[in-house]
Length: 418
RNA sequence: GGAGAGGUGGCCGAGCGGUUGAUGGCGGUAGUCUUGAAAACUACUUUGCGCGCAAGCGUAACGGGGGUUCGAAUCCCUCCCUCUCCGCCA
Image 1 (spheres, rainbow, N blue to C red):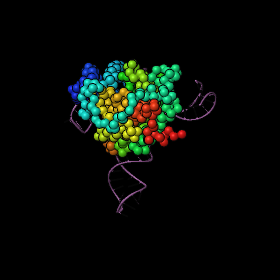
Image 2 (image 1 turned 180 degrees about the vertical axis):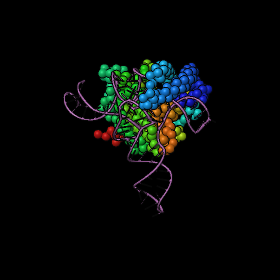
Image 3 (image 1 turned 90 degrees about the vertical axis):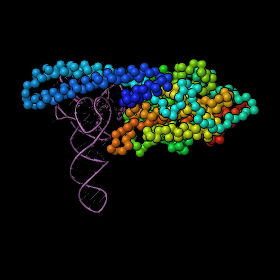
Image 4 (image 1 turned 60 degrees about the horizontal axis):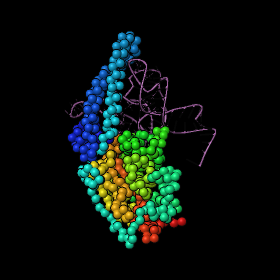
């Protein structure tokens, strides 16, 4: 959510930003007109309420002196009627205003490249050289099925499409990657590990921005609960409605979770392999930090995620998403893409974003500089560190041998030893 | 799932429907005293929103929502959450 005061003061700026990220400028006009009505109604209501409060306390005094107040009270019946009516109108406007405000996306950072879609994204850097194979490299799903470590058939029997069963070394490697990533982030990069519920309530989904706009992407579990599409949701919401101490910032969490996505709009995309699943594992990095430091923190968070690929020896590149490709809540995002030899291209394994105070405002997460200063919103960031299934696929493809087996990267060897 | 108890300011904890934004204590901040510290004493110590250049004024908030009333932390309804006991269960 954007700051209403900022929107009022800079309507043109917000409009430009909306158009850049292919948003709807009518959203803004709608917000502003309801906002104007709301402010007018607010002052009308508060004025009336003020006089009502005054008379009420007068009645209290008179009553204590045993004076007759029946006439005053019958007069006040009318006033009470009016304040009730105004308050109802005000509430309706508030609801409308809130629902409009929740649909306005974040404003892209100055440093976010301008562009209308994926083609406007800017490559920032590359690391590693794609390996040379003396044969045609095979896709990971083919390797996995041949080796008996992926079972798509049985997965579709027990669950359906876009699921996989990992077996033997496949299952072992998946867990190994999770533990390896968590170890690196906690021991080397200083994150605190958290393990959270995979089901969250509606308030949490609204806080991080999945709701109200992206309900169709989520699995609803009933009883008001939703299955998380990423650990970002429970972890960022950990500090919802809290005032943090400035000296505790930045707070850095690393969290493993299974992630659940309906992939409603992706029919026909990545139907083979384990690239796009309804359920997948991910280690997520989340930070809460001082506003003036959030862009430095974005750089270091991205570097922390990249470090996993370096340690695994997987070639990758970092791409800065352009305004048109930016996700709803983000001000700036770096995608980390790992090399897939069978496709001859880089594919996303991590998305690292600075949300500035967009999520913090929705979740009411503040900090206090010192005891005397007012609380203000923190900045929140997150990024995958990394998507586990895709990393496993990349390991298999990049380390594959001519005979259809693959080597295990040195960094993982201690994690898969029997 | 059944039975009971409870949700008040950073924390603990009061609160006959009427100067209660809320007694008191702890904590915190500033000051007095002291060579320094402690102790003691004094004062201050919630946040959101609207209006205003500002000082400030107004309004709202005692788990959430609704109701009764001139007036609700206090009464009624409803939902949520926590705890205890029983049942069931990895």
